[in-house]
Length: 446
Image (tube, rainbow, N blue to C red; front, side, top):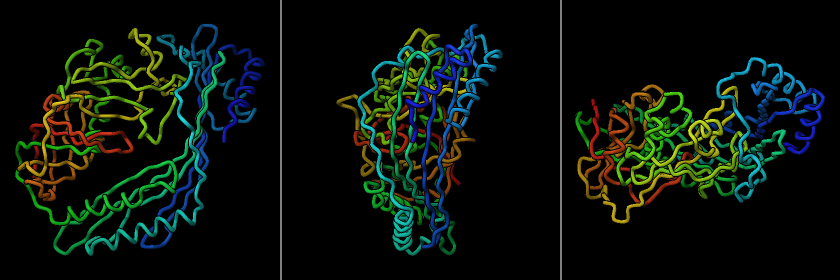
């Protein structure tokens, strides 16, 4: 893996030779192994080592040049620093990036957990066994066309000419299963599930199999529903998909670029039901992919975005924080332009006496499991969405799979129409979230 101190020493030496006084470097290295199977036989084995390094150089006029490289030896660093130095002559004079004022602050105390990777034959055997178990779960399940078991080690680092030096390493393992049914006279149906952990030994493969099996079987006997207004319950995965699709609402860079549903004046205003609280927390204990610093070296931290329906915080880089008289929050991604991105969402309610609803007692309620076509069915600048979904019509605990339907609405109106945030949360790769009930949405059936 990366030797960050060696990279730092080399960068200092090269910068002196080139007359560069101000620079920073962010990079990562990924060692990944993944396998796929098909009907009990190996289908694909992939192994890769990927490195990505971004170098920024400031000139005497404080204009910045940026370049990327995958070569971390002396020659590669020298070429990258020289190229960035030359590019700085063409740098943007408007709001040039700066070092994070927190790039040398202490990092959160999160242990780096690196797990010894399992051999490829073990990965293959494990996935073949999982596929066999899924195929035998029900006669209608005829294939697992999409599947994968992977493990990877990731190392990240940040350093700058002002003496900042950060690094961290992590290990991950994940499994993905997508089943498909075939029955005479019926449309093919499918379902998927994914689990992630630090290593293969603690990967919840049985939980993944249970989830995908139950979903697949529940979709076999489907029926059409009439179009109309329905009370809708979003699964954790579905609700977090919506939050991500409309993340410009709390992204400071989007707000400054006027590509957001919010404005700088939106802070402190009510944008959702008082039942809703939303936090972005890279350090959440359930976040397998925890990151302790961002692309500018700023330590990550929990950021309250929505508290009891009020927009209380935004995600910032160093540049957006300066322009909006705030502080960086550890959400910067550096590149030719510094962007802002989320880490790990946490959705909950802080209302002690919040109303609670039960699917076992409700009638004519739609439970949405997964939203589809988010790339095409969302207008993030207007706040509108129209999305096909997988889900069920629920009547007093009885789930009937919906043949084909689309849910549509306005995102800001949806947030204000939330009538219940359940107390029991589920951990997903994107965040921690319970089921969320929305009073009424338009659903178009067949």
